[in-house]
Amino acid sequence: MTALLTISVLVLVAIAIWQMTKIFEFSQLKAKTANSEVASTEDNKNNGYLMFAFLVFIYLLTIFCFWKYSKFLLPEAASEHGSEYDSLMLWSFVIIFIVQFITQALLHYFAFKYRGEEGKKALFYADNDRLEFIWTIIPVIVLAGLIIWGLYTWTNIMDINEEDDPLIVELYAQQFNWTARYGGDDNVLGDANVRMIDINRANVLGLDESDPNAADDIIVKELHLPVGRKINFKMRSQDVLHSAYMPHFRAQMNCVPGMITEFSFTPNTTTAEMRQNPEVIEKVARTNAIRAERAAAGEPNSEPWEFDYILLCNKICGKSHYNMQMKIIVESEEEFQAWMDSQTTFAETVSSAE
Ligand SMILES: [Cu+2]
Image (tube, rainbow, N blue to C red; front, side, top):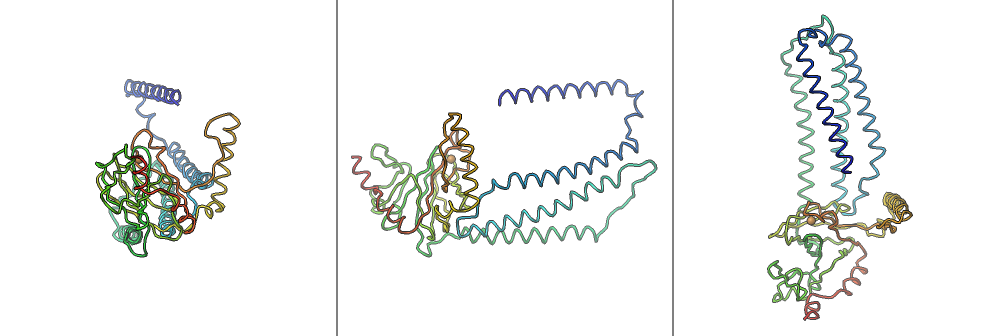
């Protein structure tokens, strides 16, 4: 990588020197070469054709990117609000795609059509109210539509309330890992503050031990969520700005030191169901093919991979930011309860640490 960068820099410096010598030469021979630098009709025509060639190039590049890279997009959303979010995104893409397809064609066509020709004079055309009205009102309507739809979707997604008995989960971010906390039997999180962190007593999240709600809290390093139940997340950060990003659920919220931020969603696809999704199956097969190659070469991190939902940090928060993640498991209510019953409460952890 460093070698590649060094070579690129050297090449760029060489080009810069070459260009500067050229400019110097031109400035010296100005009088003699004055006319040879004016584009002829032939030059303009060639440039016009080059504009067309460039148009074809960008269209082909677009098709190539669709074909080659669309498989890297996320699979179907695994949360209830996700499909609404995805259609907003899809329609924005469709509109942008159509508009760019037409405007690029027009731009390059006009560059060709009105190329310089001997004896051709540019037409003086001050303005046209009707044209200006059309190209103002169409974007206004389309953009207003997208923005209103976006605001409506956003308000719906961000309407965090306690209706429908949501499960309360705290996501605690720190350099460089995540911890989750459940409210326990009462589904109420005990008070917490970073100032009360006491590593010696295993109080890693700074829970207030005098708060009765804290005793049954359950602290875990793997996030389990029951399918079909609304989850209200409360995010905290210990040190710097982090961002809780759960791409498969189309969810992201910043974690800010000193305050509690919130996000809410209802997972609607279990991990087991998502593993059966054709796009996921294909992605797993592709990844495992690469891993098999690595394994054959004796490289590390080459064991077969199985799909899991994931919580990532989406703010560059330090040198190990890239690896700040936590596994998420979406399962049936019964499986979730069984898992929950096997966990130890905060009170038990603290008393065993004493
Ligand atoms: Cu982070």
